[in-house]
Length: 598
Image (cartoon, rainbow, N blue to C red; front, top):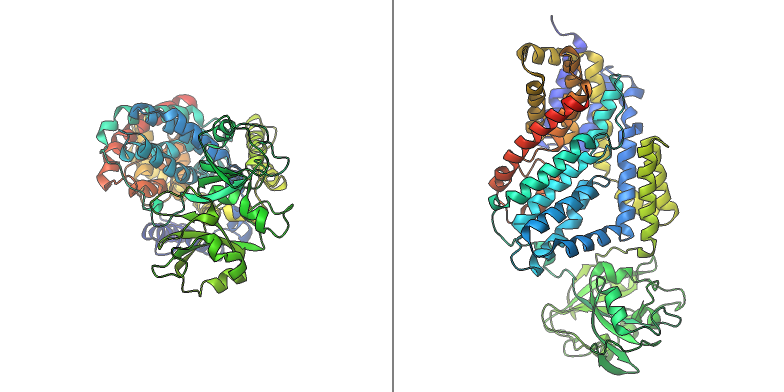
């Protein structure tokens, strides 16, 4: 039987789309928009159907989950989880792998796996640096693997799963519940953890190196905090303060009434006006807002409104990093002697020194060539300062303000969204959109941050590939391809046929995204399953899991690219552990899918 004109046109559109996805000649979101235009202009779908992907449940849920993830990050919930992971990992390599993989998998089930990988990367690198005998190359591949496997625990874990559910519903099959996918995903996660923990010897022993931690990254900014009036710390001991704030900053010393106290008298009772000399990082520096009972001394002294000014983050003033040049007029002078505020109208709120120890107050630091100052002031004054010859270079200040006082609120909103979707109280898309709005209305994340957190490339790609799947079904191409597969596999056992689908998806996802792979193969799997008397849901699950849970190369998942350099990996390192793991996962997936969805 020959192909119709519509089928020929669709196949041409599909082939060109796949080639563009593979070659990356154009961005994936641009390709997605071209797919929409091609389907509408050729009449394979009407205009409303072609653009329906933008209002589809998968696209809406993905956008909402990005906002929810941003809320957890902005309020420090993810940092708290990272702290727990660090504490529980211990010094044992086996224990560290299990703890890290379990924590990462759970987080990836509800937030974007790439964000989780990016968040955990510096945490794992620090664990390896602090604990002798732990190597980054033994922990980072297991971590990235868990991030991808964790997406199989819930329907919202990966865009591919949302698309698969959308395809099943269009085929007349029951919709998947939020945690229904975990019947297969849970065993996959456990199998991945056990395999990586037992087979860690396959991976090389390298400490790895993360270049992002170098080159003037402000990980040790020296600054000053002061105990304001009515602070919760007044009357408490220095030991209590150190224990409560250890994960936010390191105490270098403290000053009372112009007398340096060191930091040894742990039972000293704190008083109003006590000044603490601390070391912290960029995120913590910009996050001090007075709600912890401590304020930055610079804010209290130089803020426009001493009662209202509580944080360095704001619309009126900016932060800038400035490096002292070798022959600078500022070298060998203290910050107090220079008096930046009087001279330039800006304030030095912190100092970074590549080597050496700063234990004096900021005003008494004798500047050296190569020291970096964190400067705070009006944008126009900072711009004028960039012309001054006393500085070697100026760099933008990268720091994210954390609203830690709202951490409990953001966690409750996320849990409520999950509960509403899981129990069926609200449709999943409505539950997560409500949660996203809850994050914004409670100021866990502001509207601008919410928009910025949405990965538009992923959103547009989903909106574009959904009509591609619809057109495949509309033109009957899915049935033609399914019949060809059925002719070839006639007489094969059902589990063998599902393994074929899993591995086709596993190989295709190395060059396409998991979402694109699912949209191309899932409609074929549905048509094939109906002809072979197999559950369409089981067939689609095998395709989707093949797209999501295959670890053959570092390019198969974007998270692998993040860890490639820090872990000191070669291409073959991923194949050595990824190939046997994918073989195991494919067998588990197909076996459980056949028995779960009959």
